[in-house]
Every structure is written in structure tokens, then in C-alpha cells.
Picture 1 (cartoon, rainbow, N blue to C red):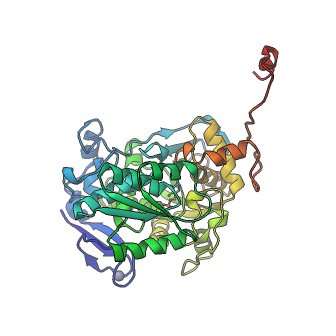
Picture 2: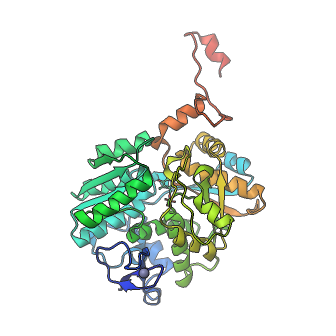
Picture 3: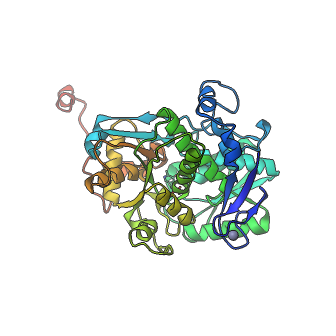
Length: 423
Ligand SMILES: *Cc1c(COP(=O)(O)O)cnc(C)c1O
Ligand SMILES: [Zn+2]
């Protein structure tokens, strides 16, 4: 089986060696021989592996190994295992969004609580194959939690660059606990990103930021798995929160490959949802700009998508065009209201994840999504990742967000009649 790294700008190809960018500066992507793979993979192959319980197929990533990283041997794979996340429906979500057939795919059910594990298992396994001993990333949180865990599992050193300012508590605590060396940079996310890139070039650290093409390979399996869960019948829409645009890119690549391999017929449409205060991709798409204009000071309560200069915008734009998709933006108010509904449905998510549900609602309002469409919203992270934002919402402590669905705790005297009143 063949695997090449191909430049998304000039098309130049190299073998899978330690490199992140083409000589021309373009990002690389993993390119597989789809003609050859077409003879090998089938719906049946992936379905048979579903309940095999055999390493590495119990993973929702490695079940699709031919489409992820066909070169790896079993002993090189580092898996917890990841994926196998559930699809949820709840009447309250249908009522809130106006979409009857809305489903939530909960990527917060991954081992470290976010979809980042799907990319990290592939990235760390590739680092393993290459014989790298130190891995690193710049991260606003979930990537570092995931990196630290997988590095710990495979006895690699991990080093994490985080920007100054608010980092959600759950995520930072994970990175520290799993044993990463955490460097807090006096600067924003983009500064942390530049520094980690320099460190990877000069200090031999294997870079596992989203520009690493193997992470994208793993994130494709969100789509593979969700379409398999729907008996290989794609939904009309897949709605995803969009920050650095790794997922949006991965989803486009996944759909392209599934079509080429004749594993699906219909093309599901991608809707990428940005936070209004961190919306450079939305502006690019809405105004049909030729180049992405970075935002200096991105601001949103949804820290996981608070990104001013998303590296993967070209690949993401291609994904939107390929699937006849759209880009939408939502306010922090809309995000936190949607989160309150997801949470009180018993499902729960971190703020960035709720952007998908808020976005779906808006797209229905705007007549883009129709009420009979099958819509899958990707819930990207677990509710416990960012407990502060949840508490502050319900206690009405957020500056720019009104808690429309607040659930305030009530103080009472120890008296049964008072309990009765609150029943
Ligand atoms: C990383 C992350 C995102 C953003 O995904 P991109 O691929 O960078 O667009 C959204 N939500 C959560 C919870 C994340 O961890
Ligand atoms: Zn190039």
C-alpha cells in the first residue's frame, strides 16, 4: 500500500518522512492510492470489525486503518482506544432548533474528552514509527490534554505551548496530570504556534499541531464512523464548530474519499460554524475574499475556537466548496443558550461544541437547512472540560451573556415544607 505526503498548493509529493510543510510553504496532506484501496475496502469489511474486540479494530479510528494510515504495523499503533462515540436525539433539541431529525454525535466521549484523540492516536503512532522521542504542540487546551495522554501511554516526552489568558480548567489540569512539560507563552495562540514550529525545526520535537497531516487522517474517522452508524446513508447536513479548521478540512477529505471509493453515493453538506468574535473564515467565505485575513484579537467564551489565524483555511475552503457547504457565525449568547439546552437534555458539552447546535438553529431560521433534513451536529468536547463557563452562566456571572435558561441553586433552611415548594 502506498502513502505519500502531497503539497496542497503545488502538488509536489514526498514519502512519509518528518516534515510538515512543502518547500513552497504549502501545507501537506496524506495522499492514498484510492484506486488500489477501492479493491481492498468495503462497507462489509468495516462492519465485520465492529464487534470483533480485536486490537486495533475496537478503536473507531483503526477500524478504518486502510483509509487512515495503511503503513502501520499493529505494534506501532498507540490506541486507548478512541472513537465509538454515540449519536443522541432529544425532543428538546428538535424544539430548540426546529429540526425534527437532529442528531448529536458526541466526540466528548473520546478517552480524554474531545475529538482530538482521533487525530492524536494517528499522530503519535506515526511518531512511534518514525522513532521520535519528544512530541509537542501549541494548544488552547484539548490538543494538549490529548497529546499528554498519548505521549504518557507510549513513554514519549511531551511539551505543550499554551497562550496567556484564559485556559479552560479541565484541559490544563489534564495536560499537567498526564505529565506534559507545559510552557505558558507571554503571547496569544498564534505566538505559541510560531514558537512551537520553530522548536520543531531546531530542537527535533515532533510537531502534533493540526498542520500535522496525520492528525487530519484520524479526524476523518468522525465522518466514517457517523456514516457507518447511519447504515452508510449520509445525513443531509454535518454541522461542525470551526476554529483552526482541522475538522472542517478532515471532513471534506473524508467525504471526497468515501465518494471516490463508492462507499457512499450522496454528498452530505458541511456547515462550519464560527464564533462571531473569532470569525476570519466566516468573513472569507461570506465576502468571497481571495486570502484569509487573520484577526489580531479573537474573542469568545468558546476558548476551543478562539482562533484568529486558522492554519487550515485553504483545505477547509475546499471542503466547503466540494460539499456545497456553508459557513455561519454565532454569538456567545447563542452558543451558551444552545449549550444550556444540550446540557439540560442530559447530554452536555463544552461551549465550543454548542456552536454546532446554535449554528444549525440559525441555518434553519435563514432557510438554508430545512426542517425535515437529517442534520448531525458534532459535539466536539465534554461538559467537564470547562466547568467555569457552565457555573458562571447559571449564576449569571458572564459579562456579555444573559442566562436565559439559568438553573440557579437555591439556599433554604433545613425545613421539609420549603423542599416541597421547590419540587
Ligand atoms: C479543537 C476544538 C475545536 C476546533 O476544531 P478545529 O478543527 O480547530 O476547527 C472545537 N471544539 C473543541 C472542543 C475542540 O477541542
Ligand atoms: Zn508545495
